[in-house]
Length: 505
Image (cartoon, rainbow, N blue to C red; front, side):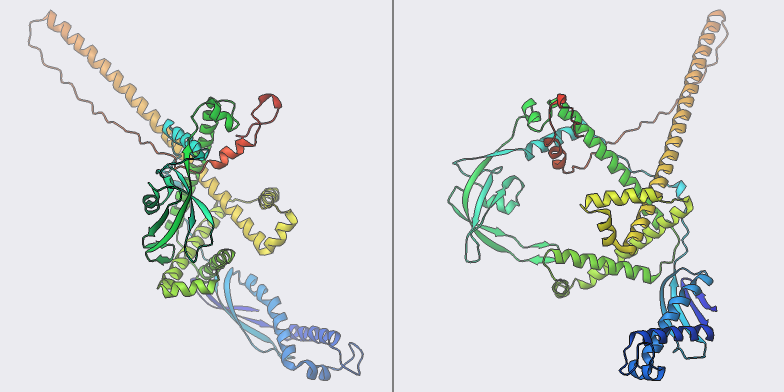
């Protein structure tokens, strides 16, 4: 029997009492397992008396096993009976005794109630960037840069050269590496420009911050091994064919299509981000601290894994931040980000419930196959890696994403209908004004005719001024994104239309 003792917001406390018959049944099950598994010299398996077995394993062991069995059975029953959705719980059990009832008390936090704002009134202002001719030309120039060739030259270093250097000094390993001066730091470029092959140069690196690291001013000695001049290909038919496009016109056309696809995706992502941010900011919810704490721990585990892959131990990184006086700031930022993520998840989960969004088994399986393919795993391998909790979490993510996409789609359609209605209204008003102006002109003509036909004084007809407003459109430029993968996709494709192979988009 479960009894609710207290409930204040997300905080809840209840007591569960298990009848003596169930307690005795649990004791019998535990003693049977002990008798079966514990070997006692002089007794056949399962035949040793309880008094002997108790001396063998200890009374505390048996009571602990009984307690765990009872909690595993009756805690979930009590939660269902009280209709609670527990996020985190602290269970305080009594010691079970043969022939007596068993009780335990639970203090915990429940899943919060979420009240969403009226999101159907949201105004989504984010839009897809315009792909102008200027954007296209800049992207083509970037392609030229990425496909530039370099030729060795015998002259002083210039600002757009590629310079191969070798580090000098006791700590140098003798390795060489190239420096592209057109994208190098200013202090590196200033030190190398004008120098020649064979020159030894000291590069002064100013004091700077890199992530959480503070670096004092330092210097490094290098020797110039080679100087190469960057040669850009002309933007012509040959350049297009070198990228496996049949013509420059086709390159421009396909590149614009790719940029427009990316711009559309960017616009959709921006609208979704704007929507979910406003949804989470405006909702009403008391977030349980346990949910934030668990998310914070999960995010910290991800950071530790990332550092480990880079060969950095978390203990050393934590000590470094502490020495820099940044550990408290790091922890505070981590908690803030964890709280933001929890709020967004809660908002989207409630949105999915309000919209009745579900992910079918076929949708889930298809998404899982795509994820497995992307990670070069079989479905079975992926399922094993994720485990039951991981699969449930992945399903929850799909549900949230689907709910977000549907809400933004509905809101976008509503805004489009409103915009069309506004345009229709403006057109009707314009038509009415045109008709009114025509009527005024007709009246003026009639007055003029009357003047010609009469010598009587004429009263002037007043004319109202119609205010006009001017609207200016702003153009947004697509943020330049790496397009190397776009070109590389094309390089593997055949340029011959007659081959029957489909051309990459």
